[in-house]
Image (cartoon, rainbow over all chains, first blue to last red; front, side, top):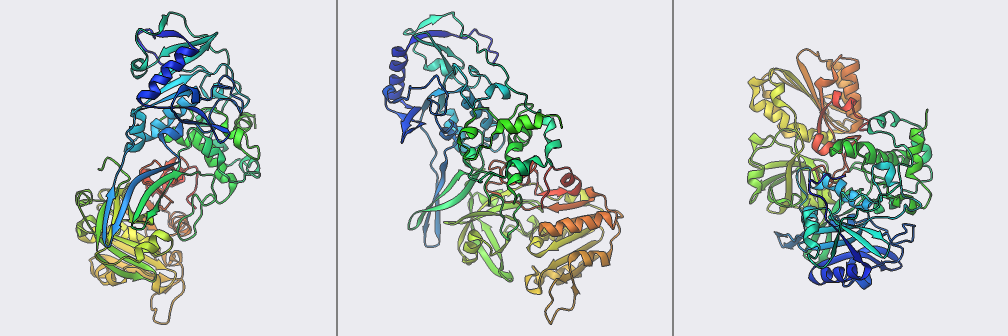
Length: 347
Length: 278
């Protein structure tokens, strides 16, 4: 939990006040919020609060209000142009464009906010700074929405999170009877809150009573499981479809390539990729490390709980936020919570 | 560095020549800010080279900084980027991003006997080591080069062998798996050649690059048959990479990233990794 010295300012607002506020934000800058698109909910720009998918906001069931993709895609989009290449005869010109809009994201769940914090460790806190991610991150304010209950695949409480964890957002909203308790978490968040219009309160949000669901192996215990036969067995059904990485708030592997825009003009792009993919490690000449599915899935789980924390200085924390999206989308029922519980079983 | 570290410098190809079958040497004159970025680099470092419109791929820098200011790359035609590079000629523009990664600790190697073992195009990132030693010859004791390829037509830098052989206290041993009629050197795997030479471990470090399977058996032989301490067996490893800066996640060997923790490792470090490079 963040230890701010000044007491946190809080306000009680009604649904109507919240909507009016969001409408005002949407008028002045880009507002991104959960929105229905092609039958699913995604974080998308909304022109007014009426476009927000409110339904199911309190229920995080698979078809509830939580976007199918995490908030990761706002800072690290599935495909991003790194620069444009213009070729005229022998002449080459490279043109750069950076994202430069001010954005407010509404409805960020604590697990997704935690995911952004974990990506910061790689893209912001480890040199060189990723200029695209840094610009988006700096220009974005996160308005969080605490979860009233855990969804069927949620396990944030097992990996150090909580459904009402406010530490990684700028403003946190807690649902109350007939409205919301709004809390300014950061200066950036405070700046967005309308001064005299909202009714200040000394009330505290009701603390979540959910606690840890199951023990997760500590970081230091992972290496001893590296050669377990379990990985080959548990991955037999894996289709290498990579959906788990696509929906994951912290999977960040990417590929870089050039795409034709029009004759003489190309874009160098980066796009999401995943270590679960068959040709992910293929090198020219045909050498293909991690040829087996078990080796690839093992890498994914080790990345979350051992490699990434080691590489980017997370200390004892893991790089899994417990959002459970990978469990929801896996077509063959690979379940990360089963993996964690298996590793915790006495040998 | 550019604000966008993925933006390459432009470089002009000032020389393109065949090095071996399907392998070309590209000599790049860096343009604009690239000249400063590549003013000095270390043996073992790598860079991404762009064939604009197709993409970029990582290559070990194939010359010593002191032989610059141009930068050399040896490129085997294998995938789409390398095929695109092979279609370029002198005067064409490529992108170069780097220098990246760690390097062979040449300062630490001072006063030591060096054994350099290169297999096929794996010789390319070792050429800067050889050049550095030749250019600072009195800093090092003996230099023994074991140079191998599947076939004589795949041996790289053949036109430089005379320069290497002529250097004091320097020996070059060649071997191929499949000789042709003109071949009058060793025949067989580099491990057979190594066994024949059977070097002493005394004040000696080895530097190996080649296919993973070759690195595996060479370092195994050095340790098990010749008694080398793993920390004196240096290797440079290849892995698929898309950024070279520890971001894209592709090149991990367990908890280490080949791009930023390597590509140069000693075998003690490699042995401590969870994953093998094979």
